[in-house]
Image 1 (cartoon, helix red, strand yellow):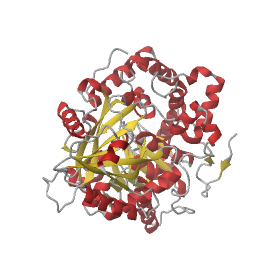
Image 2 (cartoon, rainbow, N blue to C red; image 1 turned 30 degrees about the vertical axis):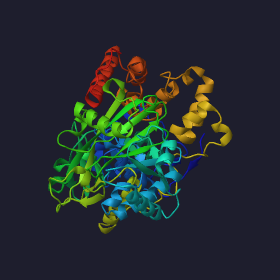
Image 3 (cartoon, rainbow, N blue to C red; image 1 turned 60 degrees about the vertical axis):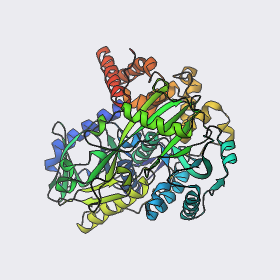
Image 4 (cartoon, rainbow, N blue to C red; image 1 turned 120 degrees about the horizontal axis):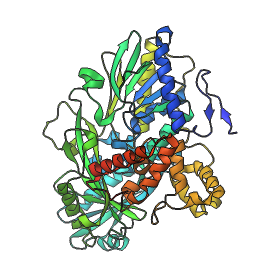
Length: 566
């Protein structure tokens, strides 16, 4: 059996070395427990939970992990899958934000660079440093001399703890990246930032929260939050009620008056961004590339991703359901036009698109700003607010700074509980900067020489050993799901039994990103994956068809493509 550490609070579950299983049986059990707790609520003098977190994106995951590590009893609720929204639809970068220097947001850049350094330590298997290339052309809004000054400041704000920037002459820039347009090239700078898998970073954060006793229930829409004496009551769709000492709303672009009352009115400005995925052979860049959008204060990225390359992002104001923000022909044409000016040799065309994703960023409005300002001009800083009924909300922010946002939010929760005399005994200080997201000894250089184990480690960290052992016992599990992509069938079964996947799209979009990397969007294997999923849940043939139809619709909305029959 795995070793077990005891949490400092006696009424919190023991801390396991690996996250507990998270499959159909565990999900059903949690729903049953919540129903029973609701039925027994009238006879209780204390709520079952210290903190309910509404939202299982990166912000909610960070809050849950921080609170659980401190010893609070935590329940996370989400209307859909974990990381369903912005947290699986970002540019997949952990970065300080070079362009925020121009906006004078030195504090935000310093915070982001500090958090980037911490994520190298606690999530090193999934946050990987990379050298970014930022070319400057004649007529660019940011000439080379400004880039040189800006990157010198960037190095200083990182406290010189990363590889510093370099300035390249045109010939050296093209030697480093031959795909760059030669005409008008004034030079380039290289600097350090990092790439990640945003959905799996969110999953790993939630899994560590679960390892420390937190419970997570997805597909549990919250319809209302109300105060009941000194507690908060969260009502779910279907009438189920859950009571806690405190509630944090981390609902991203779904933050609204429905959850926060008047405090949620006119709080956010939504910005839609798209990314396009192409084959690496069509855009064979050697390192992540930064592209200026001329006459606008925004930048775009071209990022190598194994056998694929992705381009993004657009930045346009958005209104409507964040789940319905698809990819338009206009977005595609704009992105290709901007990238094509810098990479004229790239094969860009709608017929070359492998996949695409669209996401909505929740930006916090500045009450003094002009409502007509472009969303690219709005700060990416976060805000923590509290409603008249004592509900705390965290809004805005960046993927990179999620851990520090969570620390600040949980500090606020604890301060409020202490003021009300409701803080449980033994609750400690923030520990999230000290402990890795995935427990266990990092894989050794010898282990990483194994192609399969080394590849699994990039997504699962030390947990890759367990997956590798299952493959050793049943080599069929080591077969690739799709021939030219690295994902294997053991990861499908693991997603169903240990990673909280409820629907087919959870597996193929956020646990294993075939929806983003496979030219058929996973259509060739969708039926087999759906069969394994439905079998685990004890469903029928009709349920398999329902899952396939649900997946087709999800892909149509997000990518604009109609899947071939599965």
